[in-house]
Picture 1 (tube, rainbow, N blue to C red):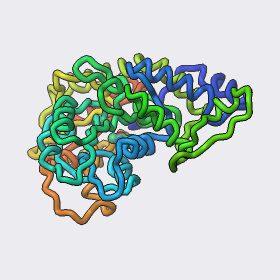
Picture 2: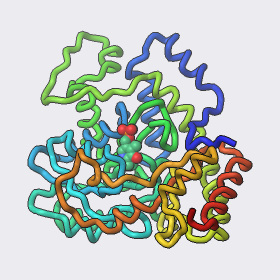
Picture 3: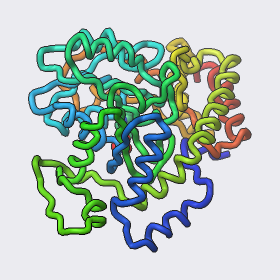
Picture 4: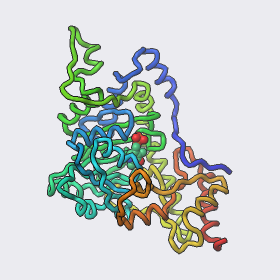
Length: 378
Ligand SMILES: *Cc1c(COP(=O)(O)O)cnc(C)c1O
């Protein structure tokens, strides 16, 4: 049997939605993007949503609009996808890595506060693989030290923190619409915020800070000349992507429910497999199960990488757990001590989980896992 690691699911109607956009003649950012933004904001309970080309540019714009610039520091977890740090670098600022909590794998508020210096402008917690970070801790630190909080919510659409949807909290949140995340528009990103002035600035920054949108000019009854009060970027989503995103957004509840069902099946099965630890479930959050991360005990007969190798041989695709950015050559050079990050990066493995993964395929993964964990070391 061949079990893929991940695959987006489409529910029908996407091709028609895209054909409509093409037939309309308006394929760049326009009415579909606006409709997608409105639907997205409504879904996560935010006042505003601003679409971008991807989550990395969303993070960049959100950091920039929060005042992050050259010479500043932004505290981030090293245990994250490298885009988290790259977005800080895109602002000309320096990412400062702090350790994660040993159970949630999310940025530890205590470690983040300890990393604050006079140059710290912001802290960017990540809702890692869809599990919300402990935001109240970060909001308190933000107030105590006068630093901004920006959420890397790449994998977290559909998650809640203490009953509140991610995207509706006090800080701007940035989502990814890449196929490896919860819902997709091919490529795409979204920033949500309840701050009207920030939303307005973000909308301008994503199109060279032009003070008029194409839509406004198109709908104008008189000649309008745009002006550029500051410098900006082009991080616009297309109406074709937005049409796909709208279809996916409608299926979000179904997608998240199916992800949870599969996660529950793994967790139940892991109870009878020794030396494999299921993901920790904090009481404060509902997660999206963008990925299912298992920790291989250091006393297991085989280590994480050997387990991945044997599963691959069985036809089961897995991925290593979330990377440690400071291990990569691109961010090497500091001898940081991040023990929980090191352990998580070394011992965790992501199992196949996606809408469309059949129960028989999942049962096969579970059976092979049990076999390898109970075998004696070769
Ligand atoms: C995927 C991911 C990103 C980047 O998202 P893109 O849409 O691919 O730019 C950023 N942060 C985290 C935590 C991610 O998982």
